[in-house]
Amino acid sequence: MNNEFTIVAGRASLELAKKISAFLNVELSKTVIEVFKDGEIQANYNETIRGKKVFIIQSTTTPAENIMELLMLVDAARRASADKIIAVIPYFGYARQDRKDKPRTSIGAKLMANVLTAAGVDRLITMDLHADQIQGFFEFPVDHLYASTVFFPFILQQKIDDVCMVSPDTGGTKRVVSYSKKLGCDFAIAYKQRAKANEVEKLQIIGDVANKDIFLIDDIIDTGGTIVKAANRIKELGARKIMAMCTHPVLSDNAIEKLENSIIDRIVVTDTIPLKYNSPKFEVISVAQIFAQVILSVLEHTSITSLFDVVKDEDIIL
Image (cartoon, rainbow, N blue to C red; front, side, top):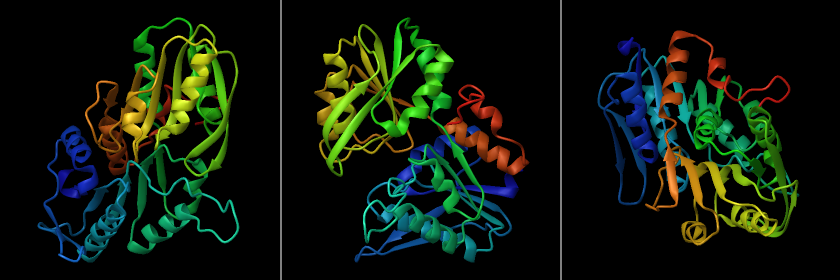
């Protein structure tokens, strides 16, 4: 089967790509990314990929050059006569721009879908899109994975009796309800009002968190403002330990410092984005095996539904 496909690593996801290729028992494709003095990027494949399925692994986190690098790798693969080009984007940047929320504004997620399509992508594998409906922006198959596949077993290993699952915003309601139903525990929702982007003005907790150990569940930690404010309010209401679990550690601005100085006891993230700094408060859980399993399923034309059995619910689909 190794002759049928190849794994390509973008520089933003090199370490994750190495782990994925190790699970698949294959070597990463030999590629060279040249950066010219004016900042232009050129992608080169140093081995033949003619007739192969090419899986290009690259999160589209900042800087924007990571997106351009992904597009160059896609274009080079198409021009090298690859059979199929599968973009593996663990963190799909611009996913928070999924609708027109004010006049005369762009919809970044849709633009990303258009650009990937125009470049020649045949399929997308990604994890925890900020909004599920983004899958509908694409005219080709999207395999949308969930970090809950690794988070849920981690929670069970903690062996905590009186637990409450909390979403730091209303957008994560379905996520925490699903966790709470599987665990047979309570859940709560933080309702926030923003003064402007990345700045929370008011925050209230809907639900009972007193005398409970809290798991704050979210898809992205960006500036850390929302989750820290939620933790502070939860603590004021009588919660015991507070643990945050977030898929994508964007961690912009002074987020690391803010989180390290917060009352949150532990922060668990995945490696969809490489953690920028070493911090004793952070723990990283790898999602490499999940992506490797999905790549195998794509190659073997098998279902990936079994990957979600641990978290899916007949009434609530994450």
